[in-house]
Length: 266
Image (cartoon, rainbow, N blue to C red; front, side):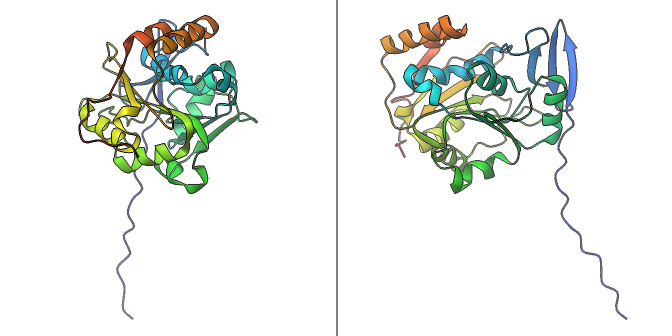
């Protein structure tokens, strides 16, 4: 009888453990490192605590007020569920979130007031790249927030041209994507060029970086950037109605048009 060697199966990558810290009334999420993955003010769980998270909501500037009630939201990367809770509970919009780490989902439900799913909220433990590449999700959303970082916060986990083209596909005409670009090893120009290859450099804008170094990029589909007066009017409405720092967003916003040579729209 001949003995065969055991087959070595590739090990699945181990996802980092979600850990919690608290300081001065704010609860923080970490992925087994000191890097902050999200935050919540304990006495105001629906408040958008971090400045870059507030700026992720700048997609609202590019959605006409009349179209806002019909906006279908998608978030890739749950964090502490701040954007998810805001879209679901404050804006009261249908919201889907995709998070690969089950520990993050569990921590958000236990420590960050993430509600159970209902007819307006769907939380999926899935791979974000596979989700946006699924033909079933073509043109299924109007607002897409992308905030995908590993436990070291070095660079985006998903940041190639194919991924951004898939993000373009999941948006319906009139849809807007906001992306957090941050990281010690990330190249902003490289990431911006990849987004431009998918959306077109004339359909991109950015907000100036936060003090912490987070740069929010907006990219949109099927329309031109509204004029500054229109953006200012929308910002005034958003700030009055939702108490968001939208006037500041308008001042911080700059177009990419002409700044990335050789990029064409999809």
